[in-house]
Amino acid sequence: MKQNLARQTKITRRFGAMSGGVVFACFVAAHSLSQVSQEDAQAHIKANQALGDVQNSISLSRERAAGLVAEVAKLQKDKDSLNTALVAAAKAERALSADIREREGRLQVLMVDKLEAEKNLHIYSKDFARALSIAERIGRNPPPAMLVHPQDALQSVRSAALLGAIVPEMQGQMQVLSNAFQELDSLTQSVAAEQTEFAAAVEARKVEQERLSLLIAEKAKLQQKSEEELAAEKAQMAELVKQARSLQELLAALDRQAEKNGSSLRLQVRTNFAALQGQLLLPVDGQLVKAFNPSTQGETYETPAGAIVTSPVEGIVRYAGAFRSYGQMLIIDAGHDYHLVLAGMGRIDVAQGQILLQGEPVGAMETQLVASTTTLGIGKKAPMLYIELRKDGKPVNPARWWVHR
Image 1 (cartoon, rainbow, N blue to C red):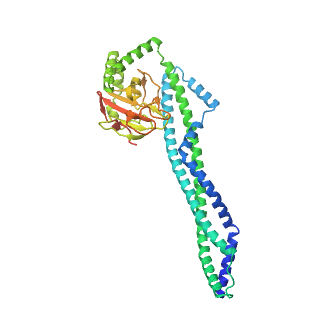
Image 2 (cartoon, rainbow, N blue to C red):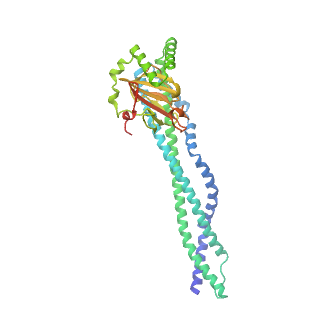
Image 3 (cartoon, helix red, strand yellow):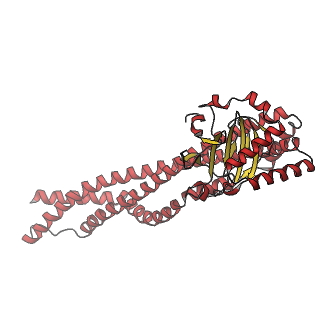
């Protein structure tokens, strides 16, 4: 009996020393965490929106914009240098877009992990607080002397046994709680570091996009036609579009027009599109959401908002504009009776008759929603690029031409 009383006293003192410092801090943390956790949960629900806000909030400084204007001005009247700069800028923008997409994915994973760590910490704190409250009640109301009454002795034994079980358990819970704090702190630092890199990549992409806009505008000046020529071409194209009941009919009409003008002869000598299978980059950085099959006749890719679209091959622009349910559509003559169709862009930056280099920017995707989700057969509300390849007017699978990723 005396041994039990001594053991009880030792445990009580041990508990008292522990509760004077670390235990109190854990109590405070548990209380504050229960309030913060709810706020953080609401914040993480809007994680994707926050990433979008980062991209939208970054803008170029006046000094940087002025520097880009001066840089492009040096390329005036030098068509070859202008084309080279266009392709290089489009390549840089594409690489940055891919980097941003990867960082965005990592950030989303980190934010989910951080939210899970916060929830675990909240649970561990509540468990520890329950054990702490039991131990503190025993500490505030110690059992009576064991030798006064038999029932007092029994109560003392039970209290000592209870404390003996609680204190080791609390020490284990304190270690779990400490580990949870460390994990949350590590994740918080990782999120902050990734957000910094993400913002830097977004800013770099904005620089390349501004450079592209200036280069495209400068090239348009070099290729400017007279108002009479433009009016005649627009009227002729409007009549072709009006008469064409399908994409196949439009392609046939465009081919007849090209043969009449003799504009495809030089291109056919330079380009052997059939020999380029497995060598071409996709027109845009995106994820395949609908593959080629007899019913779709093409491929559909989900793209980042505002992504730059490039020509995968050298070619001549046969058509650039809206066409029926396709929305904004571009038709590139790739030579040897191959035509590449790109539809769903928010903006087209090239004109009919323009000769394109491989990798040259031709337009940009919508900044928010796809032009026609009904036509593409996709229920997602995201920018979608539809790609169709035709040989002699008949659809073929374009996947055979893309570089394996």
